[in-house]
Length: 311
Figure 1 (cartoon, rainbow, N blue to C red):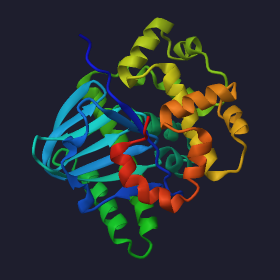
Figure 2: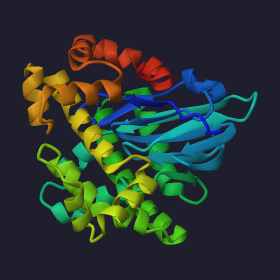
Figure 3: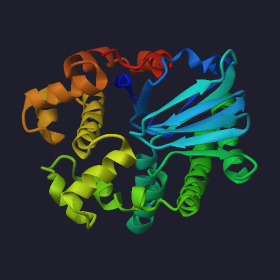
Figure 4: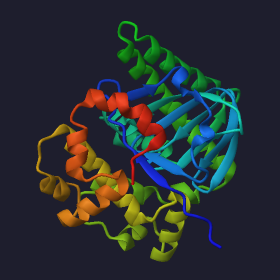
């Protein structure tokens, strides 16, 4: 008898452009995280950084599991399937930062595209679960950003931007070290040319065989490796990137839905609507109508984080 397929939910965050960071802080996030059905996974449109202040449990990254405890932190790239579970009957205290790493790097490395590509490749590699004792500087930077976001003192956004620059560099270094230790550079490094091409050219026609060629792999090997690494097919990944781009246009412009579909790489409005609803649980028009008040959207994020989008 086959195991039931996990329920996948997509959770979109509209990150403030003046700080590139959104935080979920405080006692609200001290809870039993095992209330999520076993096997259920979710993914985000942005980089998630979580810090465990107290408790213990299991983190799931795709098909992998790892134990966490107090003083550990996670770095989870966009589109990475994951879930957090507490030990049975125990509560855990987490706080979270959601970061538009791509937008920040585009501004931070404007005059150095080589550095931007290297940082982006490492930051958007595999998910990390690390101990503060092993990475005290990164841990300290995360806690400083959390403190700034909590206190909101004068010029805190400027402080967050400075700390974030240092933190992303540390994450890039940690990601490189993790690859060296696990000895699995193929799972990330070999796919980097395809991932970069998709992020830059998602609005154009993308052919899977050509993505494989960019990675110097056969199409069969590329598809297998992509599925193993990302837990989704290359085409599904492309559609996620396109839908995320459409989300931003729906929220920030008055462009007609049909124009947004074409601008984001969908050939027909029917294909766009089908993929958009499959990923977000809502049609583009309903999404736009329900998300016009960004302040309401931010308040609702606590619900979205755990329940996800209804499907």
